[in-house]
Image 1 (cartoon, helix red, strand yellow):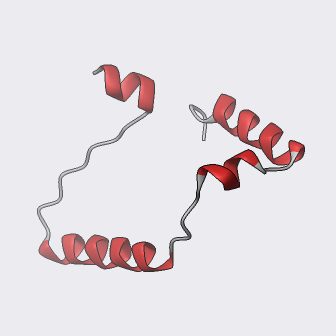
Image 2 (cartoon, one colour):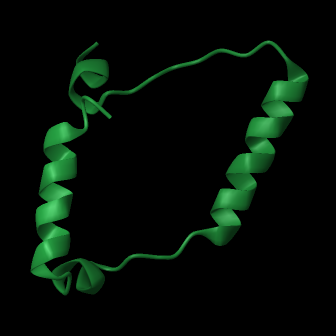
Length: 63
């Protein structure tokens, strides 16, 4: 319960093999397309990007 409240996690159970296959395919496409992010990338963000990140963090429960 703590994780649900603090991290806004969601858990779903699907009984459809078609749905499971579709979600697996989507995950694999996302994994192929991801761009690695290093700690140096985070350190060199612009001030405006850092402000947007903070706003998004504040609004995350509503998004």
